[in-house]
Length: 475
Image (cartoon, rainbow, N blue to C red; front, side, top):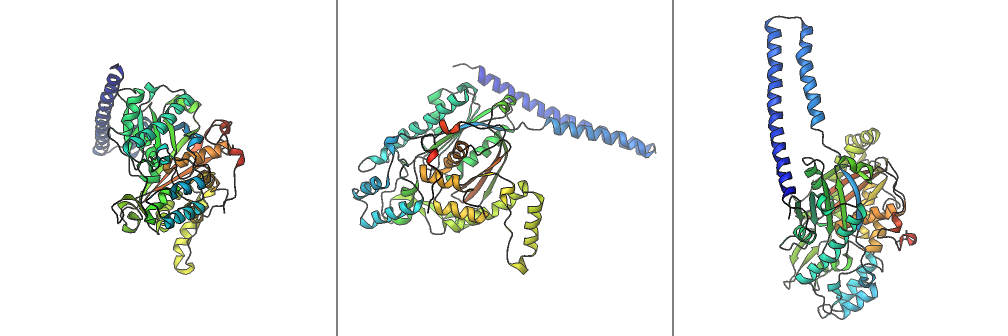
């Protein structure tokens, strides 16, 4: 394998260290010059107008420093979503019939599964991984690795084809999957399979739940602040093969009912030429944490049931925790993007709270034109929209994605954006708010601005065969 890329990266790193040292020396010299000139003016008792000279030098320096240290904008060049083959579809009747044939489910368990499916908001065309179609379901390491190959290889190759980017042009690789963390890591599997260059910076994120993709975008953005002229690829999925719960305790059984196969690949770039063909400009990312609160921390928790079977337990206060996490997130995000009048109304309601007992909910539709919420479940989507006082059309993308593809963890946000693009609703200049909420709990936001017309995506995206049948009315 060629050694040239890694040598070039070493030279770039060395040059950055030298440049940083020179900038620090220059800063000291400028300050020394300023104080020397000021001291001379004061000691010689010169006229006040002479103070303009040292202050002008200082002003020119700081303006130049701000210009030099300005980071390049990050663009979302394009993205792809995994479309599973039809042979992996799992209609409700097939799911329930399969469940009846499993020894570890009794009649009450099957009745509970049927009830959750009917209330979940999922449709009849969602997908399971191949391992879960066996009798009994196979949930070992081999099946999980096969699922990784099926999803991540497909979306990665699709992204390379769609963007015409070479594997050797990828500088940063981030793979996120909460429940499956093999050794070697998921990012190493991709590097090995596609022989990425030696200098690629690879990362694997686990345990972050449905907020992982938004976190990965934030991570890539921060890395690219110190790595100019770079391309970053993010791969997001959730491996279900190892997450299957073969037990009867209801708080553990819910994830079996609502999680489905899915994955997304996103190409970010801060190269100047990326602006000519990128879809979006990344405006901002925000992360807030709630793990310090025990109620929120244990609301979704990987644990053993009374029989020693491992699974993820969902407590009854998940909706309340999601609302509380979002409430602490909104003021920070709103302070950045809401118009002044909305901020003033919010501040006024806070000051008048003792009298009115009401807090004004800002109109976020005045800041964003499109919303991508976590497709965790119908109730969570509607609770999120209720907290933000949004209408049916605003939560349409999340509900339709949930119906068509199920809960695909953090990758769902990109299926929702693909839905909006397929409907040709995203116009140049529109702002898109992607909101990820995951276990912990944590709340992450990504804000993007569309920078070019987006047409024809309905024919090539994951919605190609069903976009015209949506939206549906989901009771």
